[in-house]
Length: 56
Image (cartoon, rainbow, N blue to C red; front, side, top):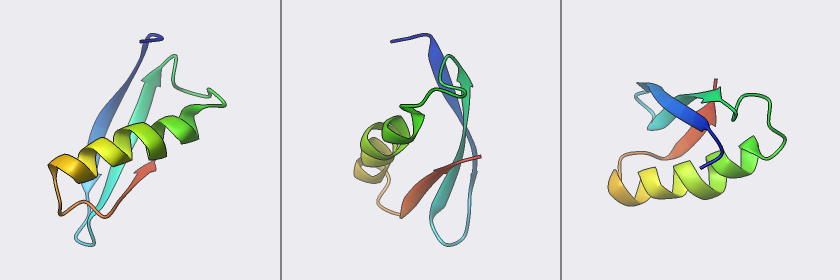
C-alpha cells in the first residue's frame, strides 16, 4: 500500500520463513509490525508448516 514489497527467500526445515523487505518497507520503523502482524499471520494461516517469519 505504501510502495513496499517483500520476497520469500527461504523456508528452513524448522518452519522459519525468511523474507526480504523491499522498496519503502526497507528501513521503515513499522516494518517489524508489518512482518509479525501482517505477513507472518497470513502466511501461517495459509501454510500451517510455517512456524515463524523473520526479516533478512
